[in-house]
Image (cartoon, rainbow, N blue to C red; front, top):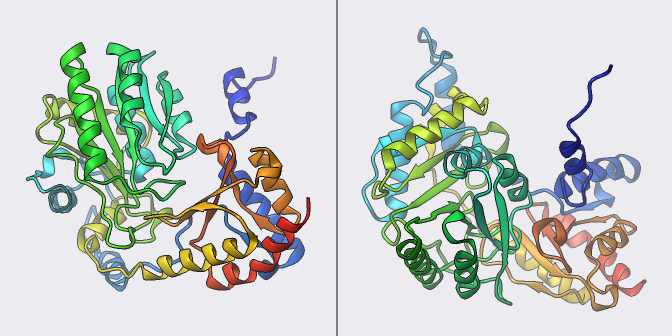
Length: 402
């Protein structure tokens, strides 16, 4: 008898939205091979096109020249002590509270960080509340740990609807393990400010007092540094003890392929020590074992390198001008490098069909349903200005044909 893929996995990978971003990205590769890269307008993948800053390149050279014995060996699963100390300094600056190296676990990117945190805090049947729209993989990450994801719509401007989250907390009772937020948000570009965080943490505190279980507030922040027009991501550690940061250097230092990130656990958490231990255990048993040694050393030397993100703001403005010309509505992003766009009314909210329509004009975007945002579609503008400017005629033509 031949082996077989687990039926629930087959069902998941074949479902709509299971890998919406990657599917469109791979279609883009085929279209570029057929029509030429300059003739395809690929806005699918959030792959930052800024080169890593010079300080990162210098750190790479320095680490590569280190020939000390054992430099490629195992280290403690939670990471090198000097790297954890550097990330603690970074987190303390961002959060405005002291953070020690012992509250940091280095991970293989933000995805590894988030999966390890969920493994540490979610038991079978537990609820994870997520404001929608959200990063498409969250559904799978929660499913990985046998949890239940509860998608709570945001307000019309994509700010947090804390009243709706409070209702979801009441409905979930003591089964709510966590609330997971992402700011700046993928796919909307929304940045949650102090007022959002104050209202959210007040709701979490009230829920904990009522049920005896204080849900963790998981803040997914790989885009933290990429915010526009004077906005900044609100700190959470001083507001809520059971807060945890998951992040990486994929977006801010343009290192997505190097898979290096970390978990930062609030020192004020009632179970901070056990939490660190649980995340470290999950890192090992999920098969990551440790974050890549080489780039742990690189980011310890270069994490605070200055980066100019103004080109992303410029590309945002170029793409919004193109969409204005075509007559496509969108939510103006406050951070990250995505535009979340409204499907034209005549398509009756069918985002998949509209993205298929755009494909006929060699425009590639991701349907919003995969992000919990039916009736919308996402465009990643971390692409060349030439691609953005060149797409105008295609967008205009697409909007003129039905």
